[in-house]
Length: 234
Image (cartoon, rainbow, N blue to C red; front, top):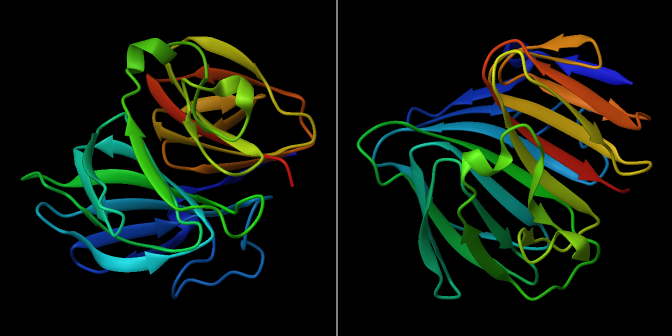
C-alpha cells in the first residue's frame, strides 16, 4: 500500500513567525484518520522566520528528530546542552523523563525544518540531546541512517530509543535506487525537494507518502531530489 498525501491537503497553521504544515494531527489541527503511522506520531514541515523560534517549553517521553532543510537551528535545553545544526544535518532530543528546550533560527533568512516525533519503546528514558553532520554527498544514490534505535546503524547514526530509523538520501534527476524496508514496518517518506516516482506512483516535493505491506521501494528521481524516510516497527 502506497498512499500519497499531497502537501496542499495537509494540516496548516500560520503563526506569523512560524508557518507550519502538519502531516498528522497536531495542536489545533485534528484528523482522526491521521493520528499516527505506526510509532510515527508527528511530522511537521516548519518554516521559521529569520531571528525567530520556539521559546522554552517542556516535553517528556518522545523521541524528537529535527532534520534541517535550509538554514540552521540553534538548540538550548535544561540539561545544559546547546548547539547549532545546519542544513542537511540532524539533531535528536530524547525527552525521556522530562526536558525543557528552545529552538531558534539564528540566521537572517527563513529556515526550513522537518520536525519528526516517534514514540519511544518505553517511558522513563534518561533525557538527552545530540546532533551530527550528515554530508549530502555521502548519501548520494542510497539511504543512510541518520537516527536509529538499531545497533547495526551505530555509531554512524544518532541514537533514538525506539524500534525504528530515520534515513536520508539524495538523488540526481533520472537516478533510481531500490531500498529494502524493515519487515512488517510502517514507512513514511517525504521528498524535501524534487518530484519522484515510488513503485510507479508519482509524488511531489513535500508530499507525504504512507507505506505499508511493501517489502521494498523503487524510487526514481524526476528532478534532483532530497528524501527523508522513517521506518518503525509497531
